[in-house]
Amino acid sequence: MHDIIVFDMDGTLIDTSEGIFATANHTMKELGYDELPEAQLRKFVGPPLPSCFRLACGLDEDEIVSACDIYRDKYAKGNMFLGQIYPGIESLLETLSSRNLTLAVATLKLEEMAIEILKEKGLYKYFSIIKGADRQGLLTKADIIERALLALKAEDYSKVLMVGDTPHDLDGALSLNIDFIGVDWGFGFHKGHSLEEREHIIGTIEYADELLTYL
Image 1 (cartoon, rainbow, N blue to C red):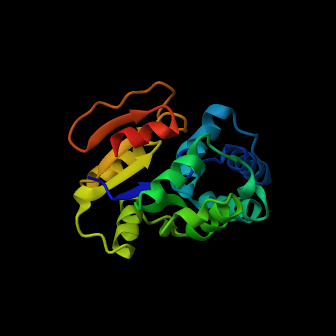
Image 2 (tube, rainbow, N blue to C red):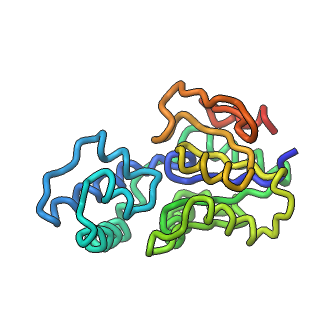
Image 3 (cartoon, rainbow, N blue to C red):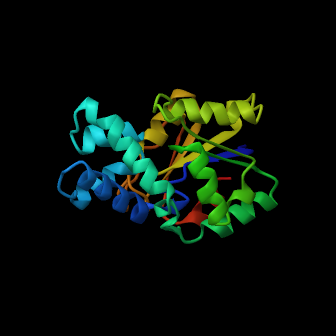
């Protein structure tokens, strides 16, 4: 039975695409490039920021540091608060908390930004620990999940469940032998996507309250 639930944030708890997309386009314009089409912008939700500029934009390595600095400066000045909590998420968190489950966040967004966003959206109170990315972009999703579990002093990983919307979340969970449930309302797994059920992969949910059927 799971007693620790670790959530991804972007694309799982909150639709942060409005702020992310606007900031990515601002950054590209500042660097002298055209704005990006939506297909490329969607690649900015999930991976570490340097990887976004590397893979989605094809920037040279010497441009990536500047791009990240421009992006983070603009994002921190207000764009990070653009976006909405996904339907049913707050009710789900309230229910899970009432069952005395331990809730955590592990996100590839900068940790301090994630904390501020969750506070502004009113979700911070539900989580015992929030762990995020470092400014150098060196931490993997698995690293961040593990940091959250270490902070919680979790010893039995068989009682941990990771919930996320991207292959990064899935791979991070599997590398730690943690059970995983995907959500199809985010940016990694398309709507109606069904993960193959196998060891540690429980399945995919379409609505927030479906998570309760697995607990």
